[in-house]
Length: 372
Image 1 (cartoon, rainbow, N blue to C red):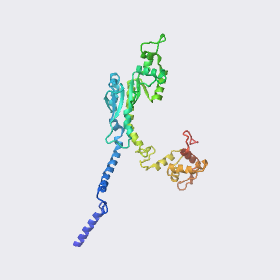
Image 2 (cartoon, helix red, strand yellow):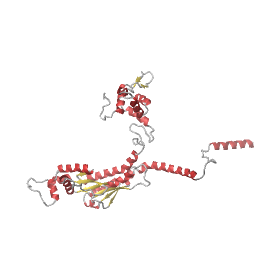
Image 3 (cartoon, rainbow, N blue to C red):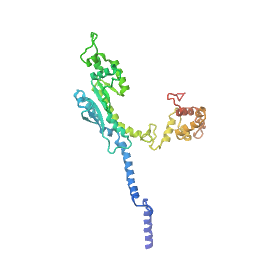
Image 4 (cartoon, rainbow, N blue to C red):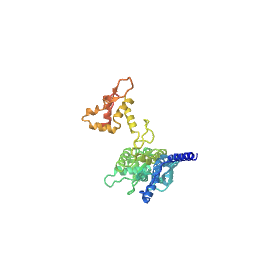
């Protein structure tokens, strides 16, 4: 009896030993010095890196990044009666705004607070690019004076206005009410001579829309400077909010495009196929791409993907062909598996020609489907 109980106890202990999780054993030849300590330290580091990589998309989401984006408003802008519309729009947007003196005056600047720790998937220049974004607000009279300098002064003495020498920021201009200003200051037919009191008066008479359009082209070509012409503070506020949202999305897009397969989304494509970052699911996406051709059934797509599991393999087969006719007819005789009692068929010359042109042509305007 005692031996039986001891046997049962030993068997139960043996069963428990077999169910124990696997463990690492250190032999006599294994060192217990710094190498072992280093190996023990690397495991938590890799886990931390995986955790940080998993949290990176969450920290870079536009709604999260928008809270770390601040709009710096020069106090001179608030002197205008319509500036309240801009402040209310920023409040509704949910981002932070601060009233701080800016150079040049009457300008808006964007500043981003980097997350801690900084995500590894985002290039450092993305964070520095926000400091160079600047929107300069100009009165119509001030803008027309710059138009005179651009369109009437030629030679090396002509310089682009509104650019501070040595400043890394390239301003974008915004002018409110320029159209209404030009219409209200058109010269009268009874005027026989130009006023000589000031440059502003000269601008009122001489400068019109042809000169403004010429200046816009020169600013774009010489200084890569955009000019926003709006009729009211409402339009300006909409532009500022849209630009702020775009800045909030910039790190997220940069991190997504820096991956090994930047064209693969994290969720499902419109075709319904999930593609992972390591390439899993690309064959199914290739199968869906074949089905996007007109008059292609799932069975025909199966035949093409079975013979050539990836577009690269099919392109290599086209390169190995000796002539253009051989390339066009490469997929013609591929058998298509049909159901029982159905006459066997093949891919055919029409689809073979279309797929060949799709993968080999360099003409973006080429019509692939002649029967469409």
